[in-house]
Length: 105
Image (cartoon, rainbow, N blue to C red; front, side, top):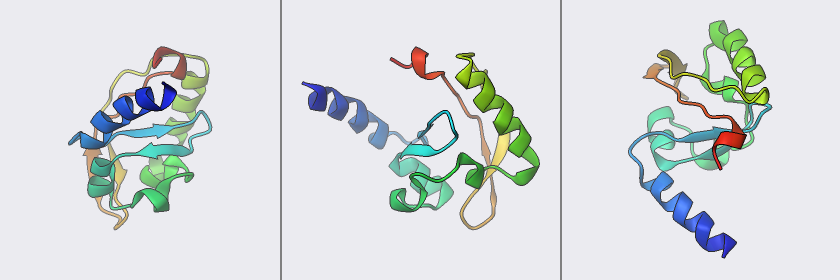
């Protein structure tokens, strides 16, 4: 039963045209769909386990630390517009939507 539920959840995620990235509460990337690979240029095997900071320009790293603190406190993060980095160093305009882990189940 668990595998069936997991498959039902993962299939729509991988079929999405929007990049969907999951991170743990330390900021490590734990899932990465095909759209994320297309937009950011990293294949799944290159990016899983890496810090989300790899995608965030250094000038915004302090903001990510605050976001992680708020997520650990189970706070909602409102969507916001920012720029992240592709593998080739080019900027990508993104609007991250983040949900604390307790709200995602």
